[in-house]
Image 1 (spheres, rainbow, N blue to C red):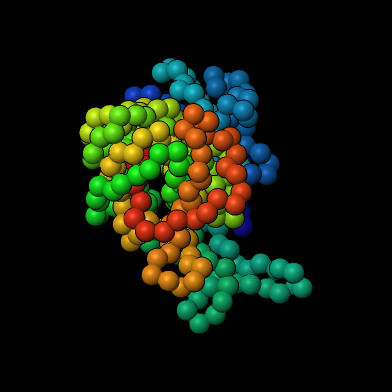
Image 2 (image 1 turned 45 degrees about the horizontal axis):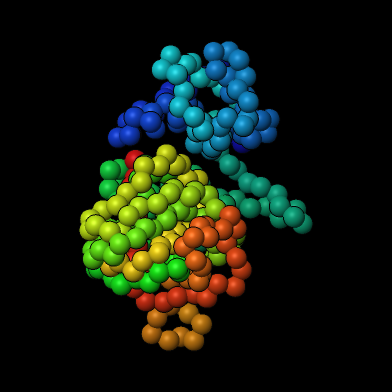
Length: 292
């Protein structure tokens, strides 16, 4: 493929999120398909920005800063990128086999146009800003019973980089006490791993939405929404059809939809989720994230 190199390409701040704290965190260029080698250089006011201050999404021509940038900040980048009109003719892989673009009759590489069409099938990329989301299909919600001193983990899939400004539960029947809410990353084995966010505590002593303000950008991948409580309120939840089915051990009536760890509320969230937690099936009291 043909490439070109540009310097001082000015990136524009994305400022259409509902939460002002999310403004001037995401910067996009008008050119896409940056190469990661040589590594792009990001500048602020002409000075090189340390790598620790941002996450680079080269294919999207996007930089996501960990902190909000000043309103007068000028963010630019130097990078090499593929020319949009450059055709992918073929590719010699291992054993010198040549692979062309895929067609309806022959196997091969996927074109960028076909990739976009395939991505469009993943409707979770279209989580609407300002609304709460959980699982894969929360069209049917119901109040469900809970138990104290159990850390419930529910899978949450993020297909593209997405931002969230609230984490919440909905108390349908009160029980005096508190619930801790958080998010874990996946280990890569469809199992909770490292703690990404301990958002804090909400009360379960009154009914209604109990939300905590967060400022979170999640890269594509599988995450786990966590809840640990010291009481047994009723919480709004999802049916199994609204959650990711992680498989069935015995081909019974219900599939695995998460994990439950017996843990005293006073111990809080472990920084790494312990191995060997039993999986659970059936309906689940849910934790929700609000999209920005």
